[in-house]
Length: 111
Length: 114
Image: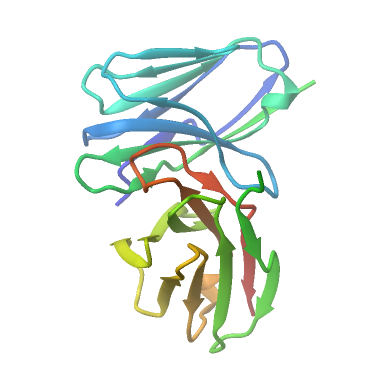
């Protein structure tokens, strides 16, 4: 059973477009992280959100944690080819002390 | 400082064989986690070690095992390999363990089982 579902699974857009990736669950998480993985490399942390309703901005990337701490979104403004990669959310389910990774969203930004 | 180092990067085995993968965490990190990544299942948690003790284990059969040494280096072993074990195996280290902060991943060991 996959606790964290991401949508869309695949996304191909033109440079300059905006996009939103969703990470949803029926479970509550103590914290949630977003990672980006490029081919041939391991995932790299982008952000950690810990408070329900929290919004964090990282240049053109905006991350939001749902009020109930069951979902999150990643919004990219004016996407660039360098944003291409696999985006993964990861949640720490309360009390388990291990991160559960989402199904992933593979983004391709065309120049 | 040096990142997480995994060896070997690539390996090919046949069904029934066994394999050992190695992970050297970032200096000062005491927690090492292992994940299996496949196109169909995504990143699946295998186990986590902290100070030579396994603290968490995922839902994998007993053929998958691991250990951690006193210098925090970790190894994982897969015995009696099956075709479905073909995957990218990722190791991640952190200072104190999962849910306490950032996981730093290595580049992975890509295993192909023929």
